[in-house]
Amino acid sequence: MSENKNLVVVNQEKNLPVVVQDGSLNAYLEQIKKFPVLTEDEEKKLVDDFVYRGDFQAAQKLITSHLRLAAKVALTYKRYGLPMQDMISEANLGLMQAVKKFDPDKKVRLATYALWWIKAAIHDYILRSWSLVKIGTVAAQKKLFYNLGRIKARLGIYDNKELEPKVVKQIAHELVVDEKDVVEMNRRISGDKSLNTPVYQSPDDEIKEQIDMLADAHENIEARFASKEEALMKRKVLLDCLSELSQREQYIIKNHILTDAPMTLDDIGAKFDISRERVRQIEKRALEKLTASVKAKMAA
Image (cartoon, rainbow, N blue to C red; front, side):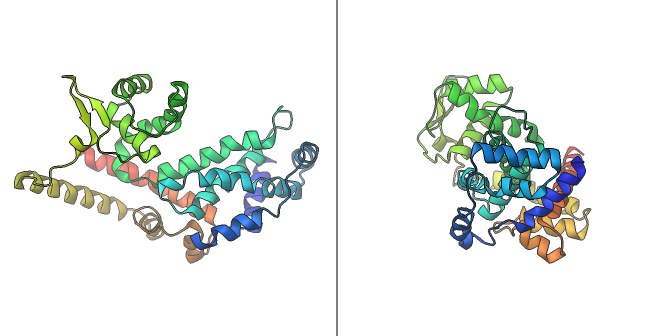
């Protein structure tokens, strides 16, 4: 029964309003306002109809009534610079998973339960979309991404400023990651660009500011040559590994991940006459293969 539920709920996505391009975002937000907000009794009846009687129209109503929640959460991640139409699509996927897996015996509203699934789907999309430069520390990056905000809140830190060195050290120790990774992740999430804020404290107790970490504009010729050689080597490894993928996998990776102007999953799906969800599945498997291949070649 669970397989059929999954198939139908995902296919129902075609009946949902979608953001075709960034310019249509306002139109999408206005469109989803037309779906009524459910009362607790209405929600409970629809959940029971779906779970116990297999009524997929009930599932559709549960999804559409929570599209505003998914969009609201997705909009809080605008600072990551990724296409908002894809961000909302991923949020909707998380919402669908929440509806599919929701237990009517839980003593919570669907919105409370769905919030976790929506955020998880968005986080997964962001991590998949980040540069392959971070391949070697994916586990540490994911750990930081999911836990940094929680730890900062526990420590009473609610602003987006650079973290104090002692806080960086404490978080790095708790999560068993490098201090520089804590600083970088906090900066990515907060978007703080101040050049005169402390970054970390060196072993000799010297406070390093972000401006101290900037590359010297007058780099010597040896360092410039070495940097260029390393970049060329990494590029060659990446291209070699990409060539091992199928033509369709290469197209998806190049046009959705390795570009400054990524195509949407919907546009890629239209090109290959497949669903957006199918594109996402192909991309995920292709990234797994590409990651393993790059790591193997770099190690060699």
